[in-house]
Length: 280
Image (cartoon, rainbow, N blue to C red; front, side, top):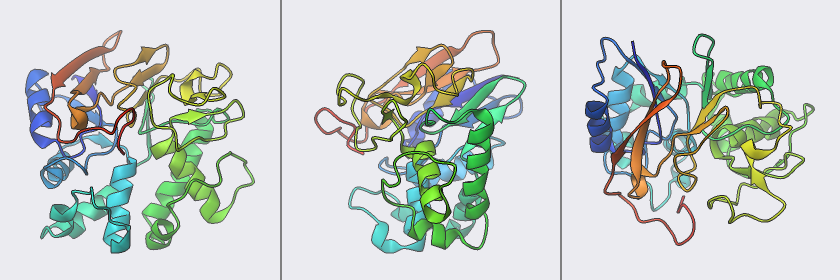
């Protein structure tokens, strides 16, 4: 059995099918892990969501996936650039959204030793803390209180971790780490407004994985979300979002070998990025 982790699709269904053909994926034998952002901004979000749901796959939630769920609850959250209407008006919308709402924020495989998430971890979190925090949000998402969660999900505060955080502020911070984080300062203060490639950020900031004393430094982490970072590999760090939506590539990394193998399918791009940043 081959195990592949795939980066942000964002509705680019045709490119996903081409990538699966490239790696000779066999659903009877192989397993796929998806790094989140299955939907939005690309042309075929509905087909992507239906297809991934049909697989025996691992899928973690990204910011666009959560935005879809929030938009279903609160239409005022919908944005001009969204391409979510086909999902929201589909006859199977309710079952698709219910399935998506029950997906995790973090997946850890004890056998392979990899941890999959969409965006990042603050430097204070080790694996045990990250798993516990993910579980807190997942529990609310899967409960009858999920609408209350989405009503309070948006926002950048609080921007620094404390175990004493409670209620909606705690859930918002956890969600922002797992689905939006790129940069933070030496104290772990999130800089969610920074979206460009390394070197474009304010001087006091570093990529979340670049702080040498972070408590997750002994983990092997796979993540998406950061298209301007591209195909980045460092000890214990593997970036999966190679900008399919923006005319880059769609990436699959094979995980069941002694070293990660990368496969990339070139994409024409469904969107044009803003100058110097990701346009997200």
